[in-house]
Image (cartoon, rainbow, N blue to C red):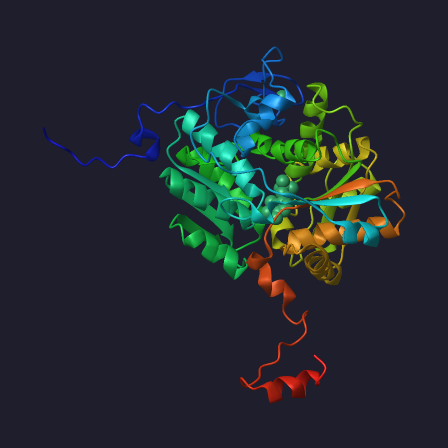
Length: 426
Ligand SMILES: *Cc1c(COP(=O)(O)O)cnc(C)c1O
Ligand SMILES: [Zn+2]
């Protein structure tokens, strides 16, 4: 018997492993059907494409779901595939924490923190969307993946592609936080820093996807990518005991997460898994990059792009792809939006840490600060049951806290020095 070493992509390394079949797509605006494929916009009208689910498919009941694996695939009937997923099987099902001290501070009945700061494997909610997109890439036979990223998506694609054995091309703005660069580079993808902001990176990637036929998760696989975000809504409903909160605050970059939360809550209501009214949705952005908040507050038909200027780099998208849909979802839900200052977002990081033990990145600081701003405006109600979507980990953006925390003293290992610092009555 002879053995020949043939380098093969992971997809072919397990030729007999079943592959999920991605669902066909349809245009959200004109309804035109499209075959499953790496295509995100309608060939007729350039509207966004979405997967088409068979309305007659068999759906599981709460008991069946509850007995399944602790991952986002426990909701697989609402994810855009036929057949079993083959990659990234253990992302999702992050904790939902009760936060009574925050509830008192916000003047509402209950607050829970949906803690994607501890998402597996890359410590942000982007693990959800990448798990969905990589299975789409596998099912479509694409053997190279990638993304345009503000940081967390780069981490998630690099980590999950490394594990799948898929080559990855990852494009980021040149000046991202150190931990987000290192937390991508460690997996050895093809990592490229682009001189410019995220919107420049995104434009380059649209050309790259067409030219080389790669599966860029948030560009030509966007229809499959976005559906992964719904699982955050599903988990919130299940972890609350199959009911819905009355209000949800979520950070917005491209606006996808917010729109998919709405879709997720709606789908669980339609399936009869929850009986409550849909929650009011509140979108959070940094004032230095708030195009979606602006649209919600000023009305109008279109996003007015901005040039981002904020330390909340993970939310720094000046021309958000789903901004219009996110603004519409917020308004239709009876919610609103808030933009917060740089100091408010740093204070938000600290408040969350001090009251819940969760250390979040800048995006989470924006979310907490937005909740405080909404409470101050009188937008939240005393009987509200509120969920804060905390989407990323604070260890990735430690720069944000520079100078914000008290100095840490250093002493010799002697009791006398300790007492000199703090007095005798410690
Ligand atoms: C990407 C990201 C978001 C928002 O993503 P959308 O583009 O609006 O779906 C929120 N928080 C963090 C930490 C992110 O990385
Ligand atoms: Zn169309």
